[in-house]
Picture (tube, rainbow, N blue to C red):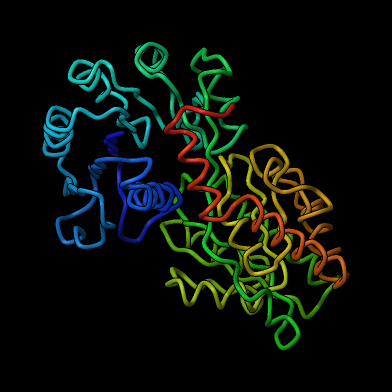
Length: 368
């Protein structure tokens, strides 16, 4: 079968959605010649200098942030390749399904859904009546990264459960496990882009919890990896809480530096309230760390409370502090949860598992 995939972005300094789409492109290359015949990827944000990074078997067309250029490339490829499946990598690209349906009416058109952009939350992004009708009438399936997102989107768009297929994220091979705790201060790690729209990650709640953590575990430290416009605000908050020497803001780190940050930490904490999945939880498990997540979003779907980490009420400074203290004081529990997280990762969230599920999505098999 021929596949046409249009995405917002694949390469560069990526976030979770771009990394997810990059894995889709990788799978298209690996399935080329077996499940997939001809595969084409059109990426709105990517520049022409990224073309050499496309895997064998995939025709890769960067849009260089030109909306008209990207739309033209998408329509040209749809006409030329007559794809059996058209994949739309974000709801912002959904309007392309109108000409896409006209050009290839017999193709299956599938939309990817991640988190708040499809929940109908007016505080983040309103869903118009036009968009609801477009998604309900023009798409054959919605591919969701979590059952939580599928449920929220079903309510917001008036979709049935049968409209969804489920394709959770993945990470590559498991790392060596947490190695630095014995030789370094017990560190609580958070990884997040520090942008205003990421306030729901709960980094401010983590900072407010640290004075109580330090009262119980005086040698504890906190490390925040990530950058963005909110960093000065969070640094000021840490200083006002007397944490200037106990919290490190590391900014953006390349993969090697990020791996080291995980290895040198004891606990990973991101008590989010609006997480569509939380790929950073998988990255923490990859290094054998227990996870502290929120219990009101997909974090509670990914993290099993008391087994692979702890889930807490987002925004509750006291509950978060209690969870972190309990893990820092109990090395056996911390090790057990981290190892169980690695086992869950190896069973469900590897690249190989992702590729198999993706092949099922292309074949339109499996429930949401």
